[in-house]
Image 1 (spheres, rainbow, N blue to C red):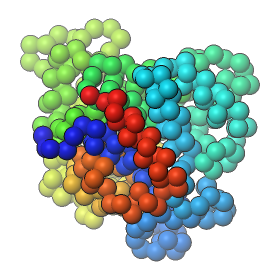
Image 2 (image 1 turned 60 degrees about the vertical axis):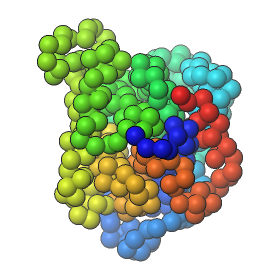
Image 3 (image 1 turned 45 degrees about the horizontal axis):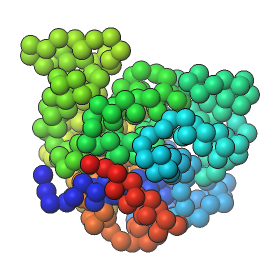
Length: 348
């Protein structure tokens, strides 16, 4: 534990996510790194403008993608209600997002609409399905990019964190493995907001929470424990992953670190993204700039990688550990910082 307050860590996590999201706006989804270097040079070190004919074309450096805008909606809903209110959040999605979409990828706020949101839009608006019946099997990090706010808000209450994160994830993504991995990411973020380190000991602490019935995973790996019952995730593997990766990060096994995208995979799926984020957030636990820039320069789905890494490292360094230039470069930075600080006051 350090002297950084839980409110400073909470603010750092939200601002870290905002920064990672905006950093990815320009060089989003270059799977050919030579092409990425052609447009943005050998090393991206700041916000960049998207190419006109690519994803987010027409937007400007420092703006939020749709992921950042949905994160805003969830935080604003929590601030208005004092806690997570799923009905209110879904109402905001209907009115402030779905009303602006047409089911295609390149129409909507933020310049691009993810597959899971498009699938939910079709079922919700074209087939009049109620919330709770519009989730699909997309395996991306779309839910993780918004539930990080729930992980921050309920960092001090693991049971409520897991319940709210799982429920929110299932609004748009119904696969239980994706749900388990997303809840695990939220649990890790919650621990970092509390002040724990992303190190070789973290998974043991998470498993203790399983043993205490605070996290809904089976506890078969805990000596003397019994299966935690129906309705829990199939295994605790998603909780055991972070510490293994932290050990690799502390031994600096991937050099240079941006090559996490090559080791774990460039695509959008959670099983590519979460390991890379854990590696970078552990390797650069005290260096926000290096963490998010290595996330961006790895190409592929670098926006999600930087957004999720930014939250993890922002929680570790606190808001004061984030270089001011990244905050200043965000469009509407004062409003974003105020939103993060207001949410942080509810934590603890």
